[in-house]
Image (cartoon, rainbow, N blue to C red):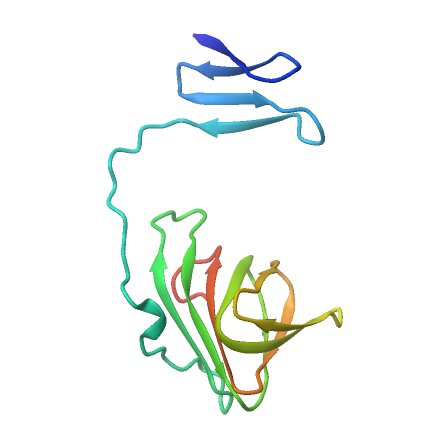
Length: 159
């Protein structure tokens, strides 16, 4: 069973909702349609981490590079996990890392000098956001320290 509901727009479009709870939205342009699941997932509790940015961050296994990383929260999705946490780098040797997953990072303290494998460079300060696609090689350095909050499509401890 499928029902159609009109959407408000100059051109008349419809949203189709099937009995299984899937909605098909004709949106035109490059993408011809997008499917959104409208499932009742119950009432799951949020997770709250007070003062997470001020916690002690364990050292990464990087030898003499002063790099620190912690996974704060990991989703329960086994097929497409999401992990969020903190990355800190201290003044000294740069850290070069090749991403095996997609990640977004926002600078929340200090600053970084960031260079990718193509030679693109950025001086990152608090509030700057970066997207590192799977397969990119990124070199991080800092004149003092840098603290970043990240969210990546990987499981716990897979960095």
